[in-house]
Length: 143
Image (cartoon, rainbow, N blue to C red):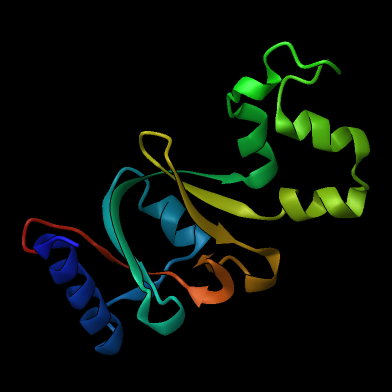
């Protein structure tokens, strides 16, 4: 790992500890759309991850997969044009609700951050596990 990444990771760990980093929520992400943030979530055995990006859309997982272009749906034998359409053909409403109610955070350039807000977290984003909340700071010229 590069020196810059390790510096950012240490900075974010300190920001969580001194409470200058806050838990990222869907409402906060919507209010910061177009702004640059740095995030951290705490992984198993110190496998924490840091990312820095400009906030884009907050979108349901179902809508994300409805809009995602995947080669496997070009000329699909059953005529599906996307993963969401395929899911809707066989999943129950309860199963689909999970994907409708899970929100994804995308970067301004459309990259999936794999940061999710599950319905059970009341709008708080997590990564990897539902209880591994994502903390953030807004990135400015000073930091």
